[in-house]
Structure formats: C-alpha cells, structure tokens
Amino acid sequence: MNQAVGTLVLVPVALYLAGVARTRSPWPPGRTAAWLAGLGCLAAALTGPLAAAHGDLRAHMAAHLLVGMVAPVLLVLARPTTLLLRALPVRAARQVSRVLRTAPVRVLTDPFVATGLNAAGLWFLYGTGLLTAMVHAPGLHLLVSVHVLLTGWLATAAVLALEPIGHRRGVVARAVALAAGAAAHDVLAKALYAAPPAGVTEAQAGAQLMYHGGTVVHVLVAALLWRQWYRSRATVRDADRAALTAAA
Amino acid sequence: MTAAAPPRSDRRLLVSGLLFGVGAAGAIDEIVFHLLLRWHHFYDRAGGAAALVSDGILHAATWSATVAGLALLADVHRRRAFAPSTWWGAVLVGAGAFQVWDGVVHHKLLRLHQVRYGVDLLGYDLAWNAAGVLLLLAGAVLLRRARRRTAP
Image (cartoon, rainbow over all chains, first blue to last red; front, top):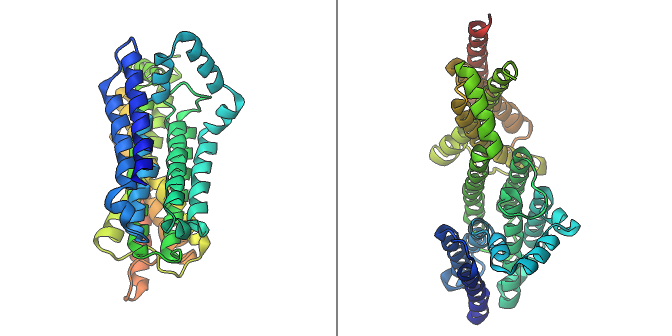
C-alpha cells in the first residue's frame, strides 16, 4: 500500500522538478515549495496514523481536509500547467494549449461546474455506503482519496483561475461559486453530525472538524481570490483614476 | 469621465460596509455564541433539512461577505473615497439585518438552534431581536447623517 502512495507522490515531484530544470526563465522557488508541500499533505494523509485510524471520523476528516482542501490549494499555487507550457518545446506546448481551450476543458474548468462536481463527489461518498466500504478496503480507499484530491484541485483551480486554462469568469462569479461550494460542505458536515454513517466512531467531533476546518480553508481561498482582484491591472487602473478625481 | 467616477466609489463604500457588517455579525455569532459561550448548539435536532441547508448557506455567505467587504474597503481607501460615517452606518445596517434574520428565521421559524438552552427563552429572544433592530436603526441614522453632509 505504501508503495502505491510513494509512487503517487514521488512521480509528480520528479516530473515537476524536471520541468523546473528545463525552463529557460527562472521559476519562482515558492511555487516549487507549494508543489512539494501539497504532495507532502497527500503523503501525510495516506500513510501513518491518519491512514491507520480505521473508522475514526476525526482522523478521516483530518485526512479529508489535507487531501481534498489543503493539498489542492498548494497544488494550484504551484501552477503546474504554466510550468508544463514553459518546459515543453514550442510545438508541443502549442498543442497542449490547444487542448486546454477545447470545449470539454472549458466546461470542466467553469467554477460552477467544477465546484458542483467536487460537492457531488463528497455527497456521494458520505451519503452512500462508500465510506463504510472503504474503511476495510485499502485499494478503494486510495482510489477515493485520489478522486477527492482531483475534484478538490479542479474546483480550487477553477475558482482561483491562475493558469491559462479555459475561460476565466469575473471575481464575483468565482466568489459566489466558492461560497456555494463552501455552503454544500457546511451542510454536509452538519448532516453527518445529525446522522453519522454506519460503522464510524467519534462522528460528532469529526463532523465539527470538517465544518470548522473547511471554513478556515475556504476563507483562505476567498482571501487569495480577492487579493488577486485587488492587484489586477484593471482594478488598479480604475482606483488610480478615481483617486485622481477625488484629489481634484 | 470625471463626473462618473466618484459615485462608483460611493457605492463601493456602501457595499463594502454592508458586506462587512453581515460578515462580522455572523463571525461574532459563530465565535462568541457557538464556540466561546457555548450557548448556541452546533445542531439541536429540532430543525429539519431546510434548517441545515439555510444554516450552511448563511455560514458560507457571511464568511465570504467578510472577505469581500474587506477587499472592497481596501480598494475604497486606495481610491481616497473612504467616509467613516457612511461605512460604519452600512456596517451597522448589515449587522442588524443579520441579527434579525438569524433571530427570526433561524431561531424561530426554522428552529435550527436556540439562543440558549435550559432557560426561559422569551427574554433572550426579545433581547436578541431588539439588539438587531437597534443596530439597524443606529445604522440608518448614521447613513442619513452621512448623506446630509455630502448633499450640496
């Protein structure tokens, strides 16, 4: 099992570092650090005490927060698509860029679609017997974790829109999509508190961890989103113009 | 162009205050009454699915409003369009609106949770909603005064 987790973590690390080595322009070290930290979160959640605590909802939710929320934010900040486009030879990069502009990618990376997919996956996991089933099946547990990581990543990437993928919506639409996803997460946490799935222990503490931990990460993503808006060229230009008028 | 810019800054100032007021009231409710005093319960089983959904939406909306309100406030400062009484008036209106909505819709209509448990609720409910109405009124007074001051 740990071998599979090791591959899952080390292959992306190696690919990213190879990409950084190949880029001609310097690559900000903070992005590399974010990539390593994101995959570190994944490794911490899938091995060690969190993975060993079968059926304890607190451990499950701590792992869920790491895999589905913290790791995605870090992986988004690492901008792997931008790195890929810079590291590839020009012709290959152009082909990748063409794929990123196709209709299916545009639909998937729409913040409302991506957030909806993420929420639907979580509701399916906790609303059906899947959670109970995966406690005793390590392979299934790994598969579900990867799915949670990928949908969380997609949703965060769509909301923050840091990379040249698909179509970028305005800040208000992305903030609303983020809030809608956060609301679905909150409702799910309280629903789990009210009616815990069969076979789990410490359900109420686990549900509260999911609720409050989720809030912390959502607020962080909202802060990143609004900082991006505050610093955007159009907003700065508007503010400069308004300040000039106010001073006159 | 020069005539169009200032009203936009004014509206942004008002929106910033309202969003921050709603968000701050929500945060105070969460931190003081849920986590510190433990008067409110996380979920008391009296409300149904509608109560859970409404609570989740309100919780997410208030935190989002706090962050958005602060970002807009930073931008208003950058535009040199900050006016204390307008902003604080809007904050109080936003906070009062949240308080009344929480007190009437969440506590009483949806029965998500109560102000406090094991006590006679009437006084607590009255104080809760009266506080909300007072906040709303204080905000409205501040906003009217701000408007009179800027009016030619």
